[in-house]
Image 1 (cartoon, rainbow, N blue to C red):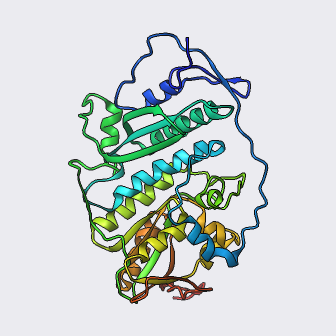
Image 2: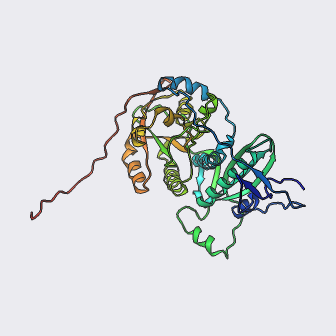
Length: 372
C-alpha cells in the first residue's frame, strides 16, 4: 500500500481527521473523483508551528518594500496553507469581476489545481488544511469546483473561475431555491474581454476607492512581503467570511456592469500597494492616503494595510457618481475607503498623510417635543 494524498485517512497532531480530502472535495465538486485501486495507508503528520517573528518592518521603508514585492513570486507557505488557499479562491473569483457579460457570483464555478509532494513533516498536514479551507469557503460561497487536478511538484494551488457549463438537476429542490436568489442569473454569459481597463484613467477629479472583500485583520503571515524580506510573521490574514464576500461581489458586479466603474484591479498578491502600482503603470499616477483605513482598524500599521493580502478591489469612479456609489455600498452594508485621486501625466503612487473625504449630507428632521 502507499499513501494517497486524496484518499488516505489523516492523523494530524495525534488526532484522527473525520473525513478524507477526497470526501471533502466530492461534496463540493460537480465532477466525480477517481477511486484508488487499493486501500491507501493512513497518513500521520504534524502541523508546522512558527514562533512570532520580530522583523522590524518600518514605515519609512515602504518604497523599498514596494520594489521588493513587485515581480516577486511567493510560494505556498506550509504553515498558512489554509488561509492562503481561501485567499486564492477569493482572488480567482474577483479576477473575473472585470469581464464583459452578465453574471453573478452564483453563476460561477472554479477549476482547482494542486501540485504537492510529501518531502517532510508538515507537508501532509498543509495539504489537508488547503483542501479543507478550499471546500469550506467555496461551499459557503455557493459555488462549485468544476474540475480538480492533483500533480507532483512543489506545493502550490491555483484556481480559475468561469461560468458553469453543467446542466443542473431540475429536480433538486435546494438548487431550485438557490436559483431564485439574487446571487444567480437566469441566463449567464461571460466574455474574457475586460469591461473596464486596469489602468487609472487621467481624470484628476475622479476617486480611487478601495474595498476589502473580507473584514479580517491585516496580517503579514505568508505574505509576499514577508517572503521577499525573509521574515516569518506567525499570523496570516484569515480570509473566512463568505457572506460578506458575497455582498461585496454583488454590489461591485452591478457597478461594473452598469458602467459606473471606470477602471479596476484585484487586490491580491502583494496587497494594496502592488495593486496601486499596477494601476499606475499605464502612465497616470495617484495621490493616496491610507489614514482612514488605519484608523478604521484601530490604528493599524501602514505596512500591514499596504502589504497584507486581504482580497479586495481597487476601483476608479467619477466624482459625479460618488453619492450613488456611497448609497449602493451603504445599502449592502459594505465598507469602502475613498483613498485618493488620479494624477495625470505621472505614473507614480504618492502616499499622503491625508486626503479630504467628501461628507454625504443627510437631511435630519429635528422636532422639539410638544411643537406643532
